Image (cartoon, rainbow, N blue to C red):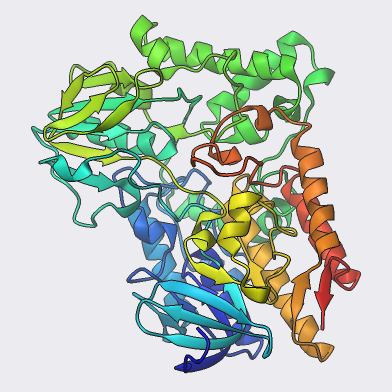
Length: 540
């Protein structure tokens, strides 16, 4: 982009108008910096703008999936249920943008296509699909950890005469599935939400399932005036609590597997299961991530629950229920669901395993499997996942010192420093990228608030010291990667193929994307880094 004339000069370009981007813009603007968000979508919301598929909702409790920097902002919104659905979440995002008057500094329908660092000037040149060419000191990525969908996994899509839609780009107007043959590909968290919601409306639904999932039932009570007032009264407690737990939720591990008798372990699991939340996973036993005996017992408990709900149907058990010999509970993303398993007991739903008989492509009439079987369909819904963590920035032509490509570097090895920056890319500050809890194992608002606050503090510290650039050193990056891998490799998570390990993306380097040392530990390490004068970063 040498010789390109900028159309705008800023202190900071912020990528994305989701949870992280909105708060990052607010902070930078409040601190006196000239900043602007460039957003691919037509409005605020990030993942909650794009993911409009039927059944999309929180699996974090609404009262903790909020900004906690302003008590009045927090108390000015009341959720209608414990786990709100996408339309309500999107309205909340609009409330935030309007209450903080953020829209005037957001450009919508402007996808960032390239960001190149100019070493001579120490500044970034950022271009967008809308024709913007922005000169900025800082490029702050708030593109999200699940925002770059995997496409074109199956050939010949153009041959299919029916309708094909990705859950990640589901039309806001919805799709009429009444009396239609609907195929859903994928039974991860998104696929589960779609299946349980659309199955009763469909003429017939065929679910193409590859990897069976451990699931937990969701209990989703309505929130009335009294319930809303009760959680708002606990604002201070919630704010201080969630930053010091393992996954940024209000609940946390409070007992160890090794300290309990078999009877106590079982009673604890029953109690956690009845909560109807992710508490069973993220506040059960910490050893579920590290201890094979604990992992097996917890897995078998869930397997038994799922088997009972499926009426012990041999075919459904084979297609939908994991085997501990394949992987243990909690070592991959655990979806919350509402009567999802019961859907398969309906006469209009068929479960098809594609684990050993994969989909080979589209036909004019539907989808064909490796053995030649053709499934005739009218609508195909692809819940095929994302290039997690690294995908948002890898989709952009990001170039640092000497023209080095971030995409090329991450295609070789997934590395960052605290998930906040990358060696060779000065003044690129990042959220929700690999090697931080926000890449998977965190209530997103908890971790994204912490990361954006750290970024604002780092920029402020530069300004106070009369410096203009910050970049992770090679030694700093090496140290963080070693620390991250040391913790990760002591867990059972790295033995499981899932998007947590990047296994869903062909050719993606294998590394646990999320820091698994815990949200509280991560926060403390980031704070220690800043307090010590940023020893893992070169600043000039």
